[in-house]
Image (tube, rainbow, N blue to C red; front, side, top):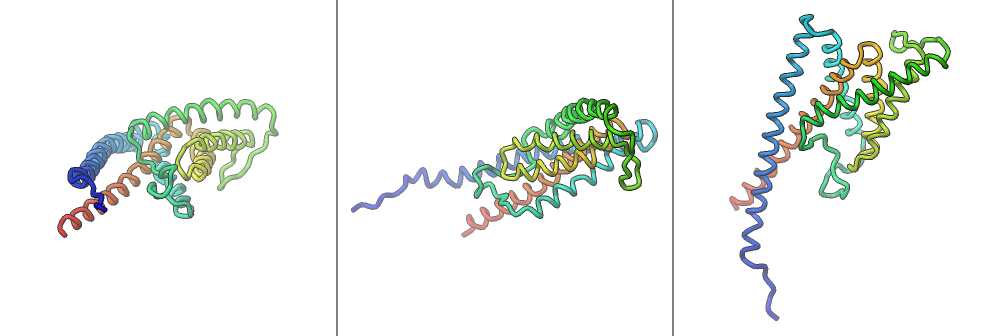
Length: 234
């Protein structure tokens, strides 16, 4: 019985397809890095102007909180035991790397903060202020009215639930992290410093995660290119 062999062209096309895939990913990463550089430069200029008193102090405060807040999702990912390898999970990988950097780092944070902080939390604060007792809760030494705490919890929880619709394999983890961040970071910033601070915090948070994810993707791509070079040398 004659052996069945793959066409020579098909076998030869596999290395070319792999090279094209690597080159495409490399180009995408380079474009993403360039856009991130623009965003980071803008954030840095805004923070410096805020520190100099030209822009409101809320800008600098939001930026500083935004730099600290990515610790929460980082810890959550480390503690999570779910597989984050897209090759072994049909639902995909939990990555903050997306093609539209500007949407993830600028547009989406502003829209979400307007919706969940300015509209939802702001409205709830007005409602709860009329129906809840006029008492304050001490949180890390700060006196926060009960109505404000209740509004932060409801708005932050709703923000977390929104992320359950995401299709990646750690959507539940992201929902918990987003809810926690909304309650503990964005909510208090909005209450004390206004919408501007909440938006800046969210922008810096997403940008920091995007930078970390891009670095990880670049490292992975470099390893794959190295493996390909080794296989070609044999």
